[in-house]
Each structure stands twice: as C-alpha cells, then as structure tokens.
Amino acid sequence: MDEMERLLLKEKPCQALLAILELDHAYASLISKKIDSTFAHTLRILSQLEQAGLVSTRTEGRVRYAELTSPGRRAAEALRMLREAVEDAADVKKRIKRIHELIDAAERAQGDRELLAGPLRRDLALLRSRSGTAEIDLLESRIRRILSRQAR
Image: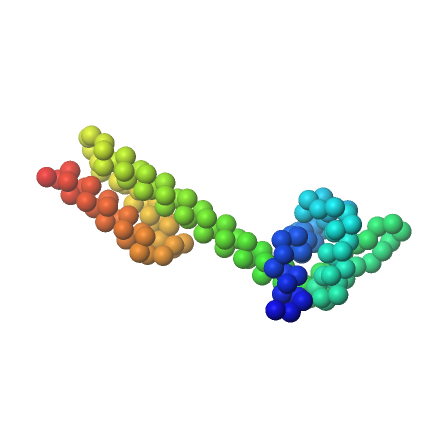
C-alpha cells in the first residue's frame, strides 16, 4: 500500500477533503473546527494532502487557505459518493427492519389486514429500487401469507 492510500484510508484526511469541497473559502482553522481536529493536526493533514497533490494551499497574512486540485476534487467527489452510498445502505437496512416489525404486528393484529398491507407494499416498492430483491421478495411473501390467512 502506498503513501496516498494510507492517507486516504484515515478518517481525518477524508473529512478534510470533504470539508474543503463543501466550504466556500476553506481555511485551516475553519477546516479544523469542521473535522473536530486540533489546528496543528489539521495543518499536518493539509501538508500531507498537498504533498499528495490533492490540495493546494496559500497563506495570506496569518490565514492558510486550502483548495482542491483537479485530482483532489475528483477524490473528494468520490468520497462524498461513497459516504452517500453507505448512508443510503444504512437507511435501507433500517427501513427493512421496520417493515419486518410492522409485518410482525400485522400477523398478530385482528381485523382487516389488507389495510395494514397496503402501505407496506408501497414501502417495499420504493425500497426495491434501492435494495437487493431477495430481501424485498421475502417481505412480499410474508405479506401474501398474512393476506391469504385472512381470506380463509
């Protein structure tokens, strides 16, 4: 593993790249606050990112500004997309767990289960585009079982 890979596998340098991407005028102390790091550590991170060719810095008076280079922008965009994908996967997992809980409740419920199943089907249709189909198929089969029991 080379130096840049080691750098980008650490939390704070990744956060620093994302902070620079998101801030209009990124300067060291603001980046430091945004990534919850000491000022000295942030300066070391900026130096490492600059040596890697991902960031360029300039000093104006006592303020050290940072901006992404073209490769740095691509890396930061890729990190942002990765973060969004991970957050999306966690959201899908949470929604699937919630639907399992609602199906469990519907199985125990008395009365018209069709009313309970309608919203669950809608939620599953929305999740189908964001998740693997095996889990959604399982949930749909559970809903069909509930409805078939009611029809008897």
